[in-house]
Every structure is written in C-alpha cells, then in structure tokens.
Amino acid sequence: MALVIADISISLDGFVTGPNPGPGNGLGDGGEALHTWAFSDDPVDGAQLAAGTARSGAVLLGRRLFDVVDGPGGWNDDVGYGAREVGKPAFVVVTSTPPARTRLPFWEFVTTGLPDAVARARELADAASAAAGEPRDAVLMGGGATIGSALAAGVVDRLQLHLSPVVLGGGTPLFAGADGAPVGPVQLVQRASVASSTATHVTYDVVR
Image 1 (tube, one colour):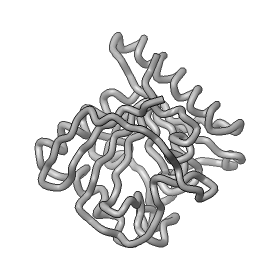
Image 2 (image 1 turned 120 degrees about the vertical axis):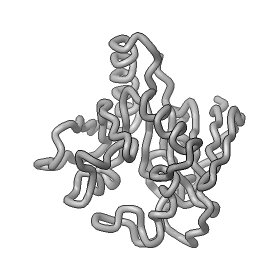
Image 3 (image 1 turned 90 degrees about the horizontal axis):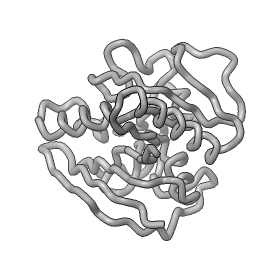
Image 4 (image 1 turned 90 degrees about the vertical axis):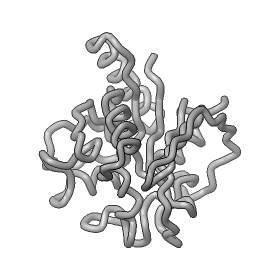
C-alpha cells in the first residue's frame, strides 16, 4: 500500500507561507524564500526534488492551495509540481464545493472530507505503483491547514520537511488544523537529514 507523505517547505519559525497569502500572492509576503531550494543549482537540492517528484503517484492539496496553483499566475508548462521537474502524477483536491471551471485539466475533486480524499490519493498512488512496477507515494503537498489536519487525523505515514533558513514572523503555520487549533501531540522518528546550501531536508516517520 502506498505511503502517505506530507511534503512541504517550512520557515525556521514554523510557517509555510509568509503573511497575507492568497491568489496573486500565493506564498505570502516574503514566502518565496521558502522555495529557494527547489530552484537551486545545489546537487543536494536537485536530488531531493527529483526523487520526491519521481515517487509521487498521486498528490493531494487543499482548496486554498488549488486556487493559487490553478489561478492565472499558477502552474504552467515550465513550472508545476516538482518546480522545474514538472511532475505529472494524479492530482486530488479536497474541497466542500468544486469550482465551476478550472484552468488546468487534470484535477479530481473529493467533497466528502479529508479522510476520503487521502484514501482516494492512496488508491491512485497504488494504481501508479502497479503500472510502474515500483513504489509510488500519495503526497500531501499542502497547504499548511490540510497537512496539519491530516497529521491531527492520524492519516500521515511520513513527514518530509524542507527547512528554509528564513524567519517570516507570520503567515500560515504548519502545525495547525483547518480550525486553527494546534496539532499535537504527534510523535516522530527522524529517519534522514541532509543539508544543502539553501535548506535542510529532514524526513520523519509518524508514530501511531
């Protein structure tokens, strides 16, 4: 069965966007610094990005992040999932109300809640694993509230953090659910850590 991996960039003070995020300012004020590593020429960063993109059999995101990446200034043929890698896994969006239309053609919407959306992403990742003949993951790429809620619900197997050397002072916290309540306690076991010139990439298993 596919692993459910929450994979996200985070500031030193625990934010996954800067202040004032939204369409046209998806990463918030100063939030571009969170993803410097994804466009870096450092070989450590490149290896992290390529490996994560290659293992993604399905990707789950929340509605607010969907509105950013499907918006006019969002993903395109040159920059998409996996930054310059532009990976093409299946994409699942958890939302109470699907949009009337989309700019990009590949979205699948789940309206029955986060657990069902995670189950659907895992099902699609399992199908991708079977087709490829090697393991594929179900990746929760965000936003922060979606990953926080998934951690609180106990549906995440592994947490992959890309710790960027920036203090944002505000924005979207990772360890809070959709209702803003703090997530925890969540016990983690560190499995890997590698540093580049732009970030520290840390992998944790989630203990259940």
